[in-house]
Length: 85
Image (cartoon, rainbow, N blue to C red; front, side, top):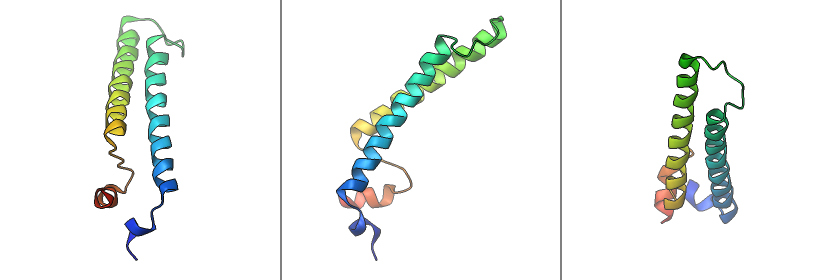
């Protein structure tokens, strides 16, 4: 049985919802890190680590958002998604 024939519009919708949800999770974590929501110690070392995490979360969130706009769902089904087009 070919996997791409059993995929439905619902499956594609779930992937899109999950992708958009995760974009908001990563961008939200970036904002929380930047605002020191977790009340990390404000020594220069921890401030640098906090900002590093904020930048990494923001960059990955933007990257996932870009992939979501392009329609590149890669949740273990990349091979089948490309066959559907």
